[in-house]
Image 1 (cartoon, rainbow, N blue to C red):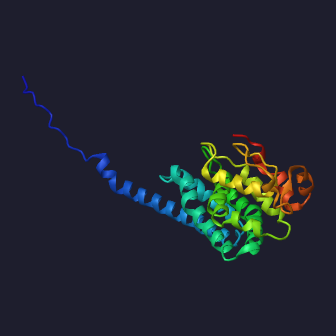
Image 2 (cartoon, rainbow, N blue to C red):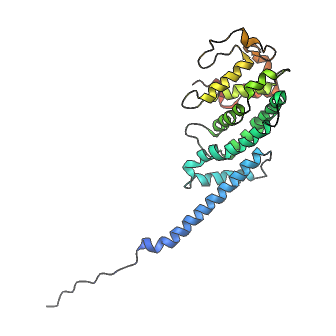
Image 3 (cartoon, helix red, strand yellow):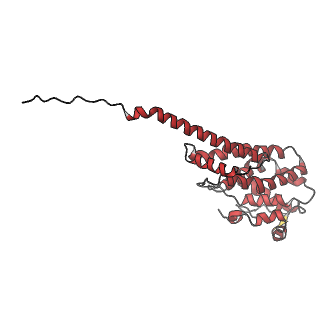
Length: 256
């Protein structure tokens, strides 16, 4: 009767340990790819804010970079990074430019700056970040709220409007009404209520979020610069305000 031999255990190299070098190499390659993609997006956005444009076929490559970022570890943070880093940095350029001017000149420069932002910068930002699907706010809404909080409410327009001796540029009215149509998901913020106070200086009568119990003859002191509500259809024949009347997503009509 043959003796029973217990088979010796065979120790094999762990597949996990053997794959570690390849895993680290793949991870580093992915991180490098994400870093390269983000750098290209960041460079393009800052260039747009500084007055530059996109090169031929650049938009396609930027969309691909954004899609790559969405699939990476940065994917869940890309909207937050756009809002708090890229957008904030770009809008700082605009704020500093407007603040170089005083009095009525500041209103004129703000009007021109808004025209450029609304017709050039904003559509380009939407195009670059087209693959991003916002959970609560779209890229367009985030950018407009950023303009409100980081530009409009930083240039002391409430003190400058009473100094305007000529007709208020229609673009200023367009800007205020478009921004008035953008609402935060949590309801009226302090910034939104500040915006309404500005609108009361140029639109008469104006019924704000909480009504306007203080409306009196004092609000009509700026008569030459106030736009009665019944005059808006006439004003909208202006090319720039016509953009307001046909704003994308019906933002002016959206209630809280």
